Structure formats: structure tokens, C-alpha cells
Length: 148
Image 1: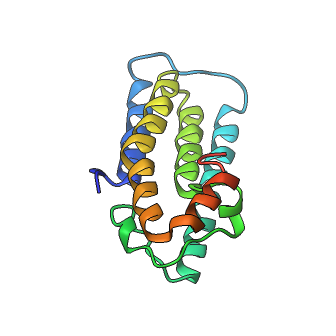
Image 2: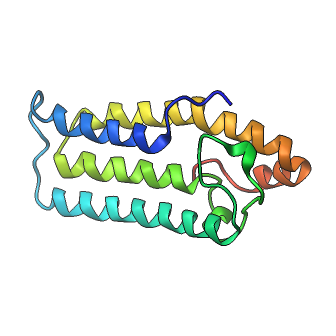
């Protein structure tokens, strides 16, 4: 597989850059921005946790570096709405921290995150999973979007 850096590490780097950027660029300031950011962050955590719970229930791997070890194609629950709820959850976590810290630069960070995860994580994962599950996965891809 072509992946290099685990997605949670990429997300942590993005969050750190969001935080550090507020020392270089004046942070966004408006009422309740920290509360809104915290709620979005919480939503992202819940989204990712729901996906992890389903993976654990089906006893398949949650390791993003080894999708070829997937034993079950999970298509129920949150996976019936998005093919990548863990990455979507990380997107919301980064979005929430962007608002919480008031990082203008966070918009660029989010675009980078989506680009990186698509190119180096999701596409290689999809190739590996399609080899494992064939027509079943192709049908799932037709009916469920990659992100939202």
C-alpha cells in the first residue's frame, strides 16, 4: 500500500499547525467561537468512535496502514452514510480546533488534510478493499459517498 503516515498523526500535525498559526496571524475573534469549535470537535470524535465501534463489533482491522487485512466490509450504521467516517471525524476534529484556536490558516490546513487523505490514504485503501470484496464493494461505492 502507498500510505506513509497514519491519518491520526496527520490530524495531530494539522491541529498543531492550527494552534501555532495563531501566533503568526491574529486569531479569529467572535462570540462563542470556542463553544462552536468544541461542539464541532465533539461531533468529529463521536463520528470516528461510532466507526471504530462497528469495526470492533465485526472484528475487522482499524489499522489504516493495513487495509488488505480487512476481513469484513462494514456497510451498516454510520458506514451507510459515508464510506470514511473515521476520516470525516478527523476532518471535523480539525475544523473544530481551527475554530477553537481562531486559526485563519486552518482553512488551508483543512484543504491540505482532505487532499492528503484522499491521495495517500483513501484511494489506496479503496484499491485494496476492492481487490478483497470485488462487486460487493463496487456496489457499495455506487450507493455511498466517499465523504458526505
